[in-house]
Image 1 (cartoon, rainbow, N blue to C red):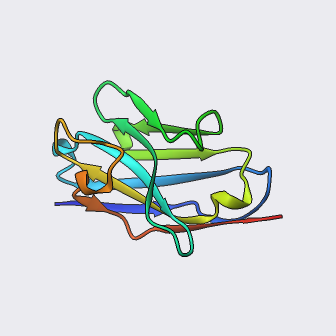
Image 2: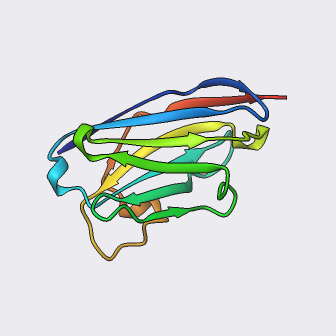
Amino acid sequence: QVQLVESGGGLVQAGGSLRLSCAASGRTFDVNTMGWFRQGPGKEREFVAAIRWRGGSTYYADSVKDRFTISRDNAKNTVYLQMNSLKPEDAAVFYCAATNGVGLNLRGSSGYNYWGQGTQVTVST
């Protein structure tokens, strides 16, 4: 089992920045990829970004590319999501996810077998 705990959400004005953190514990040596998803009010959960735990390749949704940056600290078993130039439409509950699968669609939520509890991001105008 892998446990994921997110932190860093909150209220920010449009144009501002936030950094989310996701601390992983448990069988982290099994983890292949970690990702961030978000779910806004009345919307389906959508892919935001992902990072390969070994190698560090990163992947982004088009809507956040050039504004968000995903990174990892292997020593701390922590993944970060730096969010800049936030827009009201970025407001959502952000979830951290992890998978030990290979060859899966990392942009699809079904490929992840571990999830955090979520952290709220609110963007005011």
